[in-house]
Image (cartoon, rainbow, N blue to C red; front, side, top):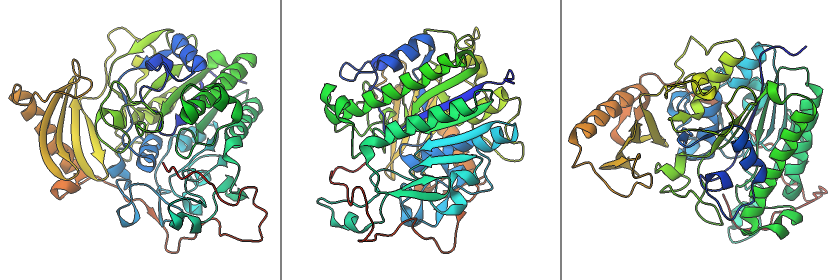
Length: 459
């Protein structure tokens, strides 16, 4: 029997930009379902991921902690993200959203991209998910042809069910439809709830393999087709919830792991910068929340909210609480979610990390850049009037600069800052295994449906 605890569906796109949806200003991508979701729910204008690339962003979102807090600032050999066969992954001792909700009696499932470690110790089923169907890392990390011959020798791309590889080098153009079918089956099987579904899209990460009907209808090439396919998936899931009478019992959250690349059709407009940077375009992303009867329809939240807030908020909605034995950086945003009068951001400051370098801080309308690619800078922007970060006003507001510099100094002591050589006092290690092995190896006699992917574009 359904309790008063909501079902929760978290939908996370890959590299979708701030300006890629109609409800955020796009005129080239077809997103009627997402635009309707915004009209029936809440649109966030100042929503941030805690990193500008995949693995640290996802690890932070799932644990409610800044990436350096969980050892996810950088990876083996200084890599920005996790690659196949790396020895590193999300420490099994970390408490994820799924683990918290599972302990509260929720059925839990992830469909799609994981990217928090591909060794058995790090897979979703070791982090609170009852089941898993998807790719353990980015869709460009399989065998490739093209101008970079080294990618022809990587292991075939594995599609996993739970911890078993069930297909190698799957047809990527068909994966989103398979993902949606998996999501619908899970919702139907657990209609009596409560359930937590994490749907981590493959799109719009490069390379873009898209079903032909979406490509034929696109005004923005393969990128627009991929966005339209994401939008179609939203229409299916919301339709299913309505058909089952679960719409007023389910919170649906839609967002992206970081900003768009800014090429191949993606847009972060009107923000500056792109994926991989600590400009707004790298970490400020679209976010929609939909829960008829609870989230007020047609509303816009302009307060600073982060993906770190999902864990404490979802925990409280489930009748639990965030872990008390460790530092959690996220905050409970239920007052904002419900549209309570005078509700404000629970964050006094938000910190922008690039790898293990602390590059910027935001407090209220002010954002101070203190470092860029290891080089010290002092650039102050008024995001209230200059969201595109075009005019440095540090010389005009020295008191604001001093205040933000003090916040940066405190964060350095807490989380560390490789750019200044400061080690954080309250960081936990990532998981490590002694003898990592890739999930697949190339076998020339294997009947792959696609032996190697042929698009040279990489994400």
